[in-house]
Length: 117
Length: 112
Image 1 (cartoon, rainbow over the protein chains, first blue to last red):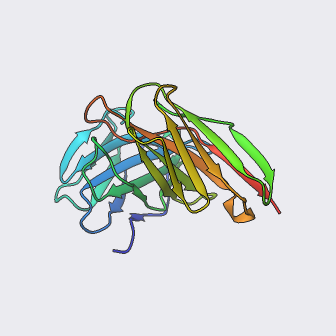
Image 2: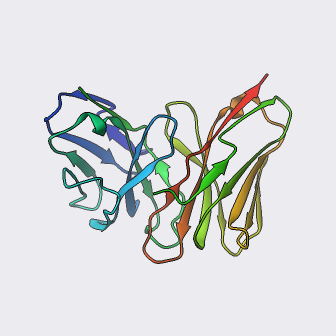
Image 3: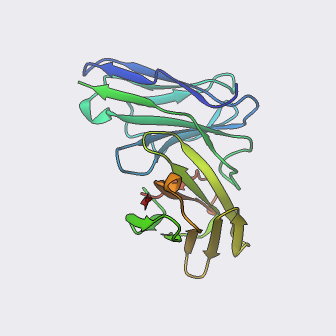
């Protein structure tokens, strides 16, 4: 596609439900990143992939959070048993080059705003 | 955790003035990038400077990097109301396979 696409743009869910957020990166981009951004703050790193391999998941807050990129393209961030503190904007970004060493420019999507009631 | 810290947190200037934002970081880096974010939108890459570079220009933007002081600055010359946005620095450390880590940002308001 022309840019990084994220869906849904808005998700309201009840506490305890599972949610899945999808990211469709720019075609051909090697690396894919997930960040979480609170209002008035910078993006907080969650995890990233080079191709289908998850390189670093140290930013995932706890084991309720997981991510996959099975075919090296589309990625899904899953939050199980959501809690109110999970409410935030979740942002995906992709890059043409491999992440982790000499990372190039990141292209960000518009984000998925999650609200947990 | 956040590696970079922008300063000031907020900046308000008149149109036509120059805006300077600073970023300090803690550990050695491979590169440093600046991004811009309009309210509620995605981040947009502005410029990347590598650890062996000291200054880069792109249009009205000028970025400097001082690795001895572990700091960078972003200068926007002849600011416009459309420059109103949040600006973030992001660093990639050279300690191995590490992701890009963002600071908390500087909120710039340019008053027409």
